[in-house]
Amino acid sequence: MIIQQISVFVENKSGKLHEVAAVLAGENVNIRALSLADSASFGVLRMIVDKTDIAYKALKAAGLTVKISEVVAIEVPDKVGGFAEVMKVMNDAGINVEYMYAFVEKNQDNAILIFRFDDVRGTLAILKDKGLRMLQAREVQSR
Image 1: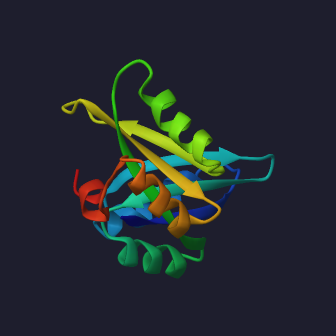
Image 2: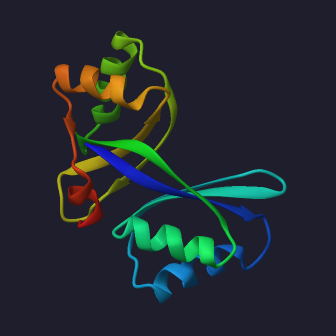
């Protein structure tokens, strides 16, 4: 239930996101979810892709700074209050969220929330015990 996420550090300059996208497209890597956080001089592009190892090697070979981290994908009903329900479980359990991002599929009734926690493995056990549906990597990578 742990998913590998690619993080790429990119200069905050025109054309840098295209560079990352072109490298991945050149290797036939499909981006399933992404988030971009920026500062004045650089950004962090976080992605779930269908071929993590290939993406990592290709981005490294292109001279980009890249890292693999562990995240958790939680499925939540795509309805008013769905996010609040998940966050209540985490709040009640004292779970700290480092960061998160989400995506919704147009042909599904659920949203997917991607979370990074301080203690991914420990948090996973708590969330499973609380009845949240966590997705396998293949479920997110192949959607």
